[in-house]
Image (cartoon, rainbow over the protein chains, first blue to last red):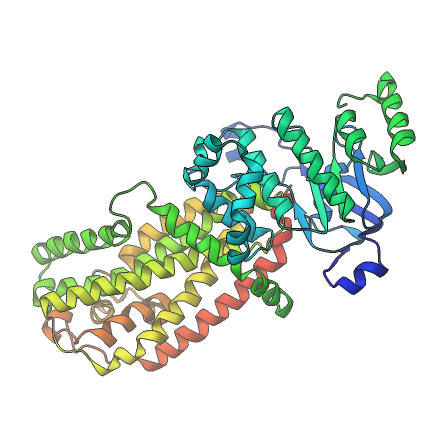
Length: 270
Length: 281
């Protein structure tokens, strides 16, 4: 079993990098279901379906210093989302070390898995609690969270109605607003920066810039090169569970884009 | 386990939020709210009382048959709904735990805790019932009440954690739990008292003594009869078929021990498997 470590002590933050990943492996087990028929299932209920092991990460090592903004790129199935999930402590590593120094926030669209009958207010309270805020802190920041998410009064009015009345974009906006209001040291974002209208996207970028200016760390998975160019300072290119290339924004992104234009790379995602 | 408990304590704010959510969501779109969690057991008690008074010859001999059923129905309803709710709970939060970290035991725990609050409120209804119908004196054994309530919480949480965990891997568990619950309503001494089983067990000589011992001393029977014997005066020998057995303190302490054991074992099992939830093959 690998090791996941998390420190929130400020003194350790100056000494150690924001994220330290050492020889990280992650193996999933996949089960192949041979037949979906009821007859097959009844006659073969004792028979185990074959289980295949799939290595999503095959030994990844890197460091992210405080204040860096890292974009993870790579085609589908290259392991970038697995890597981000490991940082969010959703999975346990199979082997290797992953260490995060600082308070983490994961961007999540509001309402994901929660009850659609809960209002926006209740969702903010619940998701705020998941991100580690106390109810008091949530209430203190509440107005600011809503104001950031919904700039027009007709949207803000909806905050005490059930979430089923919200559009996907509105849930996303509220989720983003809440995540940045938890004042994290490390922000993890998985392919969601591309939602919302143009104006809201610009607002997100400004917020991210603000984060960068005060030395916060951001790791995000993205498929759109214009987003990466606007935000990232460094690119990690994942390929088949390994790091293909890791370096400053332009040369690394160029190399990745060039490779994905190559039909031999089988790119279908960028 | 101490590390897990410390982590759980760190997330107590979230646990409370989830409990609040459960309590709010359950009757969100209903007008009568909490009444819906006490109405079904009350209606069940009314119907069972009607049926048993007319179809059997023992129910009418009880000082108050409906009180006996109600006192059993309240802990039974808690056991049933809390175990069924926690059984489904993790799959309902699946999209959340796939994306963000939280100690997973919080999810079934919030089910058992929110049902526990309903359970406590249900006892208020019993107090009201008692007050309206004046069913006899308050016994000093009511002092056992907090103990019984805590033991039942441990039992329910233990069983809840276990089925919640298993149901992630085998969704058959959900169906098994539903069936077992509907059978237990008849197997357990809810509509009758366990003495009746003891006094008629010689008929045909069907039951092994170990079965009788288990029937009398398993934690659910112990709790149901514990609530009855500490809150109600015993029924007459004519109603039960023999003298009513005294409050069995040993059986209550044993139930506490077993429930605690089940809770610890389930929690350990849950912790062992909780990281497999979102990567089941």
